[in-house]
Image (cartoon, rainbow, N blue to C red):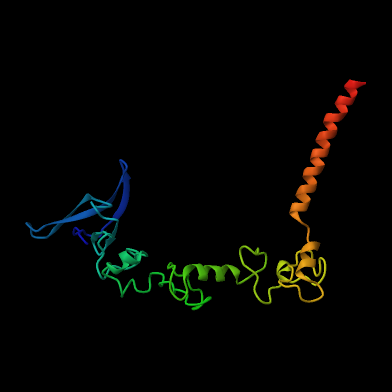
Length: 225
């Protein structure tokens, strides 16, 4: 994962030149041929990133190139973030140590409504608590503003269309008719009191035909006169 070159940390900076960033550093050379050592410094460049590297740092007199595609077991999460994909995580050499707490914990699958807390519905269509049942209960836990198609009526349901009528439009025009003919307000009487789409449709058709007939007859009478 790591490769480097020995440098003397005299002065170092990053230069942007010709579309490429480079490390600029002072390289030390020592001449020991004389009585005293002679130090000479020359300006050198090192690529900001080497082939295949994802980042680089200057540390302890070295330019260190990091390749996060192949991290070591000791590579910090700050240098190379831990993978969030479960498949990539288990193949990461830091799995279980550095990356153990870095990733989001596996979601809990629901075994009943919201059990365990903040659980996720199973993707399976079978089992003791299949996906359809789980998603239905999550949707219908709060019945407010839910239609009967979305969430069928249940015992104790206080939505207007789930309450049984005790008289015409009582307690509201949305109440449902009794399921039998027992009691003071029978199913037959209730259904007779309910607005009928068929009746209204028939009346509308008759009214429309009457208007058409009148429109045809009046011009004919004018012609006869």
